[in-house]
Amino acid sequence: MSEQGARRHVRAPADDLRDLHEAADLDLQHAAEGVRDVLGYGVVAVSLLRGTGEYEFVAVVGPPDARDYLLGTHLAGEQLDRAIAAADVHGRVHYVPRGRLPDNGPRWASDAPRTGDPEVWSPDDELFVMFVDQTGSVRGHVAVDHPPGGRVPTVTMRSQLEAYVERMVPVLLHADSLHRSDEQLRIAAQARRVVRSAITRLDESDLLDAAGADLADCLRADEVWFHTEDPRRLLRHPAGAGTDPPSEIVERIRVMADRAWRGQLAVVVEDERVLPEGSGSDGWEEVLGFLHGVGLESMLLVPVGAGVQCLGAVVGVRRSGAAEWSDLEILAAQDLGRDLGSALQTARFFERERGHAAYKQQLIATIAHELKNPLTAVRGNLELLQDEVAEQPAATMLSDRIGRATHRLAVLVDNLLTLSAVDEAADVRDGRSVDLAALVADAVEVVTVQAGQRGVTVSVDAAPGARVRGMPGELEHLVVNLVSNAVKYSDDGGEVAIRVGAEDRDAVLAVTDRGIGIAEEERGRIFGEFFRSANPRARTRPGTGLGLAIAARVVERHGGRIDVQSTLGQGSTFEVRLPLDR
Ligand code: ADP
Image (cartoon, rainbow, N blue to C red; front, side, top):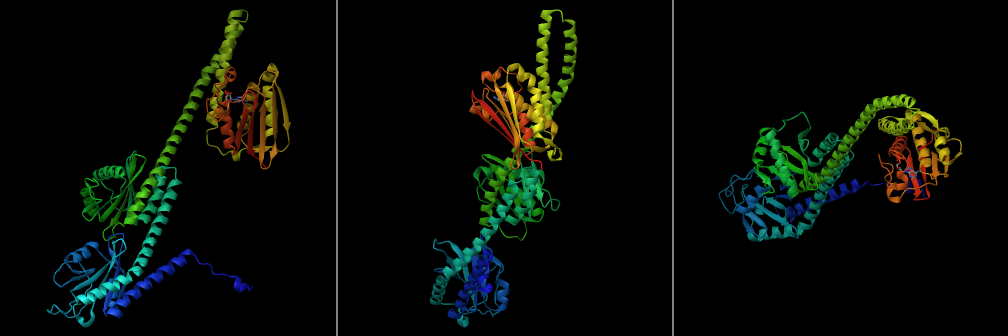
């Protein structure tokens, strides 16, 4: 195959869509030309009913001035409704004779002469056919002017016009659905952007900032306001320009949002009315009054919430002269209210958690520091006392007890201090290169006495190369903790096996004991702070429930993972994997 033949033109979906649109617009134009060529009308204008309730002229046949005036313009729904109400009706054909509806808004009229003869067509006469779909809903209309012979069309001619438009319906519907899906696509794509940018933000202000600009695009709003409850505030996009609504208006919006959330509706305030009617949006007149006062025309209020709780509202506002809010926009906005609600709730949850965690860490650090000084004083004085009472067995026994209790207290305080230290932000990649095998050797030293007293043997299988980058003090804490736990939770005469080495990209440390084991239901909780087993065999051994919590945080800070495998009554293996330092 030649290179030429192998190369294929790749069409983007957008190309296909554009082609479809062009084809549909051409079909409309041909259909309109048919009315001129077959039935002899000099001007034919085809409109489609938009989601905003307006009729947009999408194809126009006739003299240039008619095309310039009509093509792409919108006819208000009410204007056409008034014409329909005033018209002589033959089927779907409507004829409004001159003078019957003198002030029905702007419309194109030819400069043909006006005569008093009712049989002669006048530029002020109106003739149009409504077109409806299979369900009977109005989807647009076809208006004509310059009838053949310059005479008011007879009933027969009106029937012919109706029949011709009837034949155009499939073409009109096809074009209409393409235009609609276009708007749907635009809104869906932009709504996705809003949600995507919102869900990745865990800070509330960030989230609202990020969503604001995208929302303005999606809703084609000139401004977007966010009203949030708790904290009660109003943010505007773009901030700075325009006028902030006063507190009474914000309060109205709050009440409207609350009602709207309960009814799961979006509320439109425009044009001296509120939609949907009867939505209980008391006070909307004041809101509209404020909008008009600052050059704004209408607003779309979308309640934002999650579950039964209304968290606030998004309000899109449009300036005077902008289009009305379309059905599709209103529907999309309702969905967005729900999506933003869950994003907002998640962000708040995380904010609260962050606040709690920071507070807790602060509290633990403060208490531990405050305990340290008196504890040192107690220990120092106890030593002096023990010298004094060395000859008195009863007093010696009591002071030894105090000594053991004080020692446990000191361990607890040290653990608390370590716990708060490993909570502080630090970039462990700036740490030093540490050899895990060396840490293991040190840890075995630390537990020698304890293991010896209970006849527990500790064996080490160390392969070279298990280097990790991080905080030496923290890593030492981690290793000592796992090794001393293994000894502590072994039975007398038990065995502890430690393996350390490099596997793939990880440095691996595994500490195995044949001790009391951990029940399955407790395995998920042992890494939590202050967790101690309910197992009576574990309870007899001293501990604070902080060792593994510290271990887990150290591992996490160093980008690794810690896992436990255990069988109750048979023993446990704790395995730590940390990224190798190469
Ligand atoms: P503690 O100070 O109580 O040892 P840790 O945080 O180190 O606190 O451990 C939490 C709990 O996990 C312990 O109370 C114990 O029940 C259980 N545990 C830890 N290591 C082992 C082990 N090697 N064998 C059995 N149980 C263990």
